[in-house]
Length: 244
Image (cartoon, rainbow, N blue to C red; front, side, top):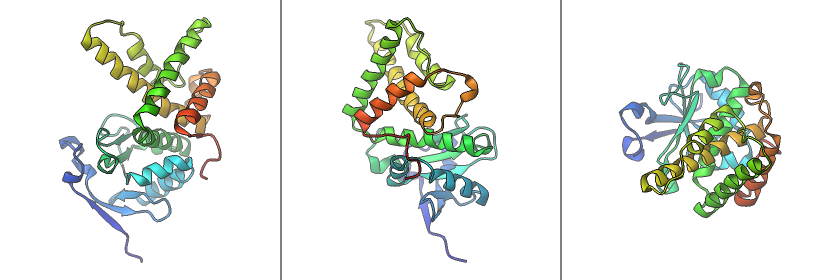
């Protein structure tokens, strides 16, 4: 039996760790096929499933995950430590070398390959978003806001690609515009969060059309506009070919 390549991460290397997330440091073993580092106690079948699905993601998502040194763990619970089916953690405001991201996946994500793939795409899209230049992200956000007005001008209600993305949109859309500095700052934060989360959900939908299809949302036109904006601002096309 070959000796695994081990990476040990201390609390000092992950400034974002608090008491709730202390389990995300320690020993991580390299999966040779995917290049991901898995927490030492991650079950072998979880490593295999996540590793294989990771290799099916668009190349640019895989490249950024490996570039940032993504580590991975799973939980037998239905929700991650942050209360989601899957979650990626990191110090997003620091230089790339200090982000030190970690992906946690629950059994809710691992129940099926379909969900695992889509959730991996969503979480790795957070990593992709984090390394994009600020001017490119700002330009993308302005295009997303213009899209909202385009749909409204046509008399259509703005419907997001998934219910989760819709909640992010509604959070800022329901906040009244104001000259109050506190409200202006809060609205800006909510717009940025909506843009980021809807980007990640859109990538998941563009990669895997069946993702959240049970919600019955008719968003092909919105996805087409978003795809064009991704190409223009990020030189990123998540649609094809996957895994190449």
